[in-house]
Length: 564
Image 1: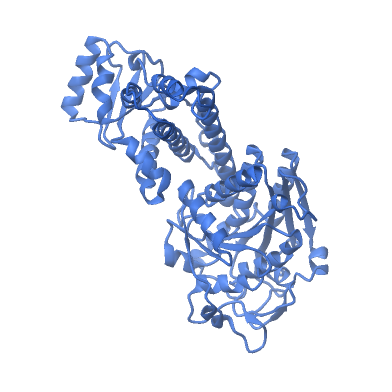
Image 2 (image 1 turned 90 degrees about the vertical axis):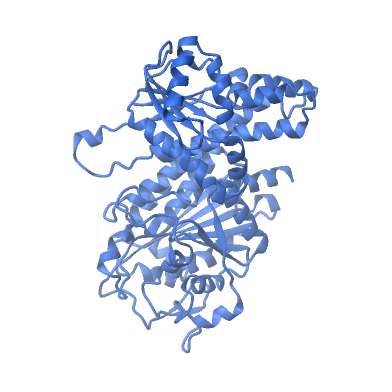
């Protein structure tokens, strides 16, 4: 088991660990070396000269037992002008990939050394000490330094959790089963230590003095901010880990019944969560015929788990603006054969990931519960298994949905929207603040945006913009697509109110147009995550996206509701 700790930047040669990782910026080198014993200075400087190391981004030097140092090994990792990188990545997702990848590569390299203890040393002393001696320190500049420090820790935590995720799978090798996840240990109990971790003690003291003890920048608040950052990233990692584990499970194990069990387990684990499993008889009584059609040929009975997280009072029959729930609907097709409209055999094994939307909803609610956010959420898992059999629904069938609108089935492989449309109209009963559905809905989403960015379509401009902004800050970007009336023509039917698929039309937008007809009475956003929730690979393919975006959105909304 590897234990990774985060240490303030001081007396580097005295840090005790199997491996010390020094995140080294160009301006950091000489002042740090000057604090070392003379023999260590000579040794390090000679190595830097030989390797032409100047602290540029991605440069690395591995030293075994440097002279007069307490650690067994030093991994000196160049991070370049990290202050500017962190500033950019905090506000702009396209700039974050380089910084995040830098940290991911660093952790992968460090973990390959199989050290029992790793200490990260941050490259901030020189910069912050210089700032602390200026006499014109303002609240804005000091706040910016704290923001940069917190952003650095956040990036490190995000990269660490990303690198350390493992899905052991079902291999029987004892060696593989014995793998233990590395742990990250960050001590923030001491205000003094927390201040050193994020800023530099000198800057922190100077800030407090310059601001006459302003509470926004006092040491206690710095400690609170760091602790909140650590807790947030841990909760996010736990939620993403749950979603990724569920997504990686094979369809013979992760069935609709299993997903319902996971919803019940969440309710058992957290006092603010309750779960109701709506069974097949109730679904039939509700007239959710489109939902039921998808599961008709499955060996498993139809069900729809409904998860309630009550962080801010009642979630039903309450007109108070701040207690209206956000409804999250996740597509949970545990295996998608395409039904009668059969998929190609070469691609079909990827369809275990077609429940990633439901896994995302479970992960979001788990993360929110761990954070204790002051918000009400209702999660609906639209679960089914799209199978083949004598009872399967067919192209040409006309189905009356829960909303009483009729649908002519063109493709049974357009099953996700059939599930989601009934779940959308069902969610109206909760008088929602907003409804967001998350689905691996169309291959057209991958054609349009690849695997870098999710898609969003919405009937509410404020909701769409809030999700885009949340994605930027979470470095989990999403891009808007139009739902113009002209696109609705693609799903016109001669025999029913609409078809469930278009012809010679942009498939991702057509799917959004279909769903929009069931979301006219509340603010709604549809997120197509076919390209981002998983990658077409053989190992650790599920990403846990867009959980960072959604948790960030919910946290901002909870904060706004609390203050209003």
